[in-house]
Amino acid sequence: MSQIVLDAAGIKRTLGRLAHEILESNGGAKDVCVVGILRRGWPAAKRVAFMMAQIEDAAIPHGKLDIRPSRDDQKSSEDDTEIPFSIEGKNVVLVDEVIYTGRTIRAAMDALMKHGRPAKVQLAVIIDRGHRELPIQPDFCGKQVSTEPGDLIDVRLTDTHDGDAVMLVPAEERK
Image (cartoon, rainbow, N blue to C red):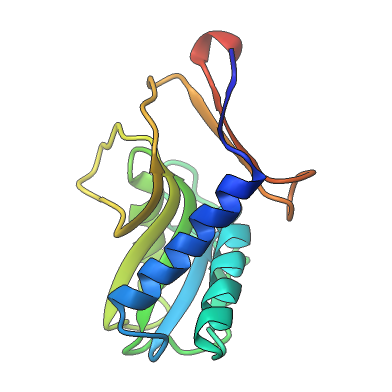
């Protein structure tokens, strides 16, 4: 049976905590920018950047990164990346909704480096579900969830769905 991992209030608290942790780790907002991984990391990145801006009373540059051209399993020539600022020498916080095998993040780092050389790249995720294939770990994690490989973590944010929720859908329900 599907279970709610985070409800709307839980997502709001989690994103707020991530914003605070990012700012604390970086000593404030100076030289920090946020880049969301398309498709599902982008809505979370916008919200984290907005919360950081409210906390620091400063603009937080944010953009979106299309990793499709950098994937090793499904190449695409389309690129919907929009990073309207320089990442050169900046502390870039990559945001995605879920980390699983690490392959998406590897592709994101490859895609990001085409836009400049940041001082540091950090990773923020809402959910860490384990099962890594690559040695990649998030710097900032909203919640760790134990899953089986066939399970689905369904992150729903108001930008793309009716309301906020994170659901764990067991493999047997997906058949």
